[in-house]
Image (cartoon, rainbow over all chains, first blue to last red; front, side):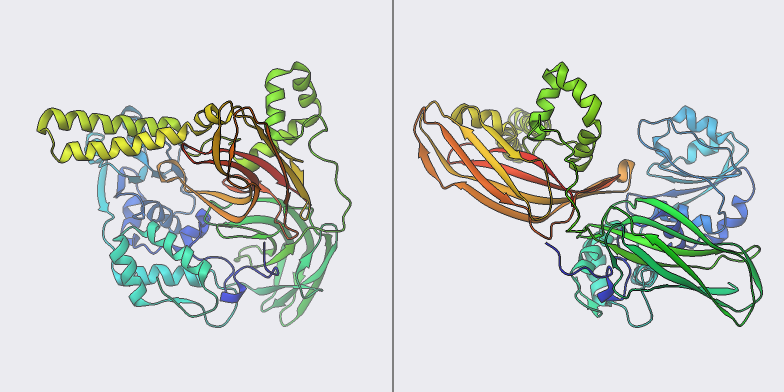
Length: 206
Length: 366
C-alpha cells in the first residue's frame, strides 16, 4: 500500500504540502495582506473595518493577518444557527458576522470596542446606526504579482532545509488565474494536488 | 534575535521507531550571547497535515535543562524516551499523520528559540496480537448494532465491556454504517425541483426552454431517487440479502471472510457479486459555510464472489470469499476532521435495476 517510509515531502525539500490547511497561527504569519494603515484607527474604540467578499477571497486570512499588529485580539468565527460567546476585548476579530442575528449585532456594536469584521453581507447601515465609524474593504480581484507572492510564501514556509525548492511557473499561475479568477481557495486545492504529484524539485505545471 | 540556536540530533539515522523502542538523542545548543533559560523543553506530539483541518494529540514534555549558558559554547543535553504506542505515521494523499519532536528554550526577555523534526513511528509486526475490541458475541458491526437495538442483554453487555469499541468503530467510519451513496432526500429534492420547472414550463411556454430544462432535471432526479432507494428495490428482485464480513478487526496481512446469501423468489440475472476492500481518507477543511469534506480511496482491491449468471427462482445463493488485508496496510486512524477507515463494500450488480450495495467497516490495527 505504501512505499518505504521516508520523511514527508523530503523529495521536494519540503516538510509538508505547502497548500494544505494551515493552523491559524501559521496562516497569520503567512498572510499576504496590506492592512498597516488600519492599525491606528483600530487601536481606538468606535471604529470598524469591514472586510466584504465571497468565499475564498481572503476574509479570514485578512482578519488573522491583523494579529500581527494585535496578537491578543480574540478571533471569533460565527457559525450559522449558533449563539457564540463573544469575549470582551478592545478589538474583536469577527468572522462570518452575517450569521449573528441583527438584534445581537446591534447590541455588539454598542460595545466600547473596535471591530474587524469578515462578512458576506454589507453591514454598513447597521454600523452607521450604531454610530460606529467604519471603512469597507471589498476583497475582489487578484493579480499575478500578488498570487506569485502568496504561492512563494507558502512554499518557502514549508521548506525542509537549504537548497532549491519546487516552483510554480508564471504560465501556471496565469492558468490558475484564468481558471479560478480571484478564488484563492480553489487555487490552493489545485496546487495541493499538483504538489502531491510532483516527483522532484522543479517547475510545477497545472 | 535569539541568543542561541538549537538542534535535535537522534542517535539513529533512519528516524524510524516501533512503539516502546527507546528514542535516544541530544539537543545541541549553540550559544551566541549569555543567556539563562527557565526551561529547555523537549516536546513530542503527533499532528495531522494535508487537506483537512490540523489536529494534534499525545503531547508530552520533558524538561532537559534549567540554568545558564555561556557564549561561544556548544552544550549537549541528552534525552531518552520510549517511542509512543500510536497513532502510527501515515503518509497518504489528503491525510498525513506525523510525530514531531520540538526543542524549545524559554528565555526571558528574548524570543524563544525552537527547532522541530519528525519521528517516524511504525507498527511492530512481531508484537503479540492484542485482545480484540469486539467480543465473540458479535461478528460484524451491523450485527452488533442490530443486537444493541433489539436486545437488553446485549445493551448491558455493550455498556459493560464494549462502549469503547463501538465508539472507535463509529469514529473510524464517520458515523455511516451502510446503505446507498446518494441520500434519498437529496434525490427527491432534485426530482421536485425538476417537476416544478416542468410544470411551470408547460404552463407558461408550452414546449420552451424551461420545459426542456424541467425534463432534464426531472430525469436526473428520478434516476438519482431510483438509485438512492437501491437496496430495497434490489431486494424485491433478489430477496433479502444477508452479508457479513468477519472479523471486524484485523491486522495487516490478515484475511477476512466475506459471506453473502440471498434467495430470489423469481428468476433473476445478476452481473456479478463483488467484495471490495477499500481504504478511504476522509478529511474536513474549514468550518461553517466554508466547510468542505474531501474523500479519497487510497486502496481498492475487488474480489469476485460470483461471475455474472442467471439465478433460478427459489435457488439459495450462498457465497464466501477470503479478502486479504495487505501486509503493508496502514492502520485505521480517527481524529477530528481526519480519518483513515477501512471497509469492505459488498455489491450485487444487477442487469436491470439498481445494484444492491452495502459497506462493512473493518478496523485495521497492528
